[in-house]
Image (cartoon, rainbow, N blue to C red; front, side):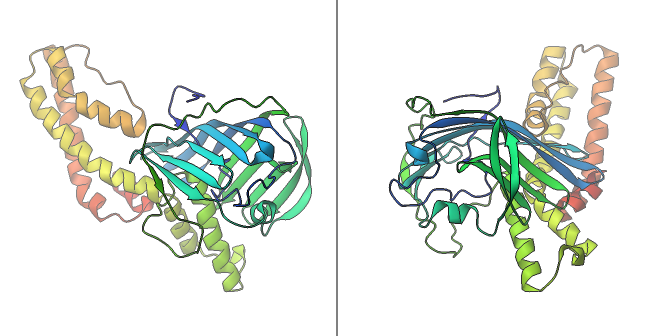
Length: 355
């Protein structure tokens, strides 16, 4: 599998705000170019509260042949939350598109989901409710700009060179930085792992099913909530100026729901781990034993925030006292906040708890 950075590969099909990008019609041309490769730069971010920000950074690669009927996408993608709450979201996905079928790798369950593509014209679906509004030059190519509610796309011969989603100060951008067209098609480098394949029937109706997972990618979350908001405004004959501050806060909390749920599980685990480490440290006789004691705490912190330091360099009486006091202070702090954390229902609530 191709790796674009040292961290995990994230493979999404363009991150175009939807996964339903290829129609079921066999051999239907998606692009007006037979083969090609597009390399993207990914960025984004926003503010949940005065104390919590999110930034998005990564890069992606699209390769296609047969006029886009067959396509592969790979991305390295990271969403980093900083402030009173630290959180890193890395997602490992590999997707292939072949004629009428799409294959999604679920690395959590170690399965491959085979799905039929939605029926209908690709361009009509992809540009639904969008209006053409001029042109831009991206990576040396002049593309047609299409704009809709909370989204913008720029296409060159049907190939997306720019995708932007934005809502309430949050944004996601995927912009081409290198484009090579009419290249020699090569075998797939996005090798599907040896996982069992399960057929997953989707796209037939709009009825919600238990098998559909809520999106983890913040780019997709922005788009989904944006659609909900504009649908509500349209149904009630309202405009964006009519949204109250209370409604804005509710929408922002929905944007941060995945981060909130991750932290609400993490903080009690961290407290329990720190208590175990503290008891172990009390008995440690040297720095090697002390570092073994804090190993699980460090692993937890690295998993959620990327912090990998905090190794104990010495275990003389002064440093031993300092380390034990630090653990005592943090344990007391978390214990005092745990009732509030358990009662928290949104990322805003959690921000207030852990200040």
